[in-house]
Image 1 (cartoon, rainbow, N blue to C red):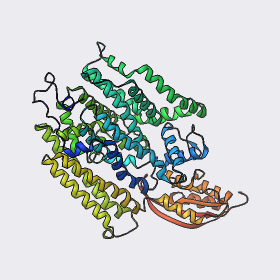
Image 2 (cartoon, rainbow, N blue to C red):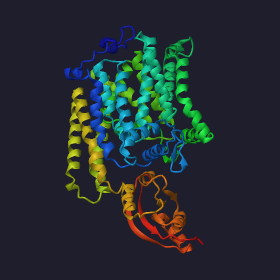
Image 3 (cartoon, helix red, strand yellow):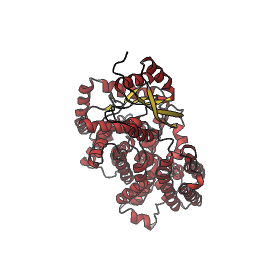
Image 4 (cartoon, rainbow, N blue to C red):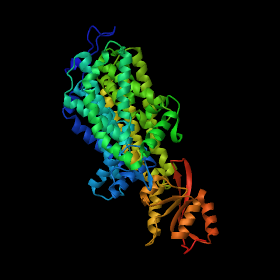
Length: 585
């Protein structure tokens, strides 16, 4: 595919405006585009490793995934999924297999959270690679590399790359499937080369992997895209749907079933059907029916959030959308618009909303944005889009700089801000780079604006993860309590009992046998077995009252105050040593 094929609208389908200008890439970008995957790997490691290595285990999903994966390593059971002694049947097994494998291969012991984050790190790098691969079906190598850079340098993918959850790996699966679907679509619509049978089957492998990681996102994105294309082209009649035969659906579905069904059958037998009831009947259905776990939000949530979550690429997304609308008669551009808009509308319509739900729409927008950087659209709508994107960019930069400056003041150990000069420097340098990028963008020097905006993120992100986060001691209660338990523990102690403060990060810190109970349960366990009880103030009254009833006693060993960010409130936890009774009366 030549550059002219990828970037010019044929005369018979061009809009009323003049033919679209050919992309003009600077020479250095052309040179870098010869080795895009090595460059993206290096930049991904530089951007994400500081967070992977420095952040403590986070609540709640990360610690739940990591603890369940650790128990899989310890038990050797690669079918069942458990958190503590309770089945965890919300998500399929794929991410647990990856985290268990990375931890076993790393050989650093099972209590280091970074080993569980390696699949996310590698998945995010793969997602950047596959963004380039998808873009190469639409445009030239330079714009494809630029799309990969914009995707890699987004705040949301940066966050997902540094924590042990599903979404970075899932995005790579989405892109593997969408890249094949895009090539089949182009082959049917504008005569582009059809993908080989092997490539198509690899797309189905991506679908199967996505199902094992987080059903039903990967097939969902593909189905939404296909339905959107049908609706746009009015393909409901006349056999126009036959282009889907290029996906070799029968062979692909058989391959997917062969890859997925062994574990599905095994977990069905292991759980006696409980996995399907909890994952589909409870978790998935509750997200569709209403805002699950207080994560509901009205439509427009992801649009407002994009100023920060898609920063700094948001500076170029508005012009990219305008360019896409102007070139909508091109099949490949139409595919990108339908992909992004279709999935965005789906997640805006779902009552339960979490920031990462919109991530599968971002690569299509990154490709459009990259193309608009090299061949900017003109006209009133393009100017308006540029100003809207500029406002969003300023909001995102302000939030990142403010986080560096303000978070330590609220949640650190009391160190004066002036003594935290690295944070001040990171906030100032990042803000200056962002301002320079904004000015260059308004002056229509888009390539320089891209480079400086990405450089700003390379200052902001490590500043937050490696400089600011370790200072936020009031947030890392579990790490502090782990140290206090280690100092107070005696040989022969049973696992600690937790009452009130029972966040998954503390279970990951103390082990799967940690007792999760209430104040009365902690008192009864301590009176029977002795050992330590970690009691939050809200459970303290019941704990002491039950001890009195049992004629047992406990002595406070240490205490800790902090902020439970999962619940949004301050907490105070006391570590007690409970004297064992030989008999509970």
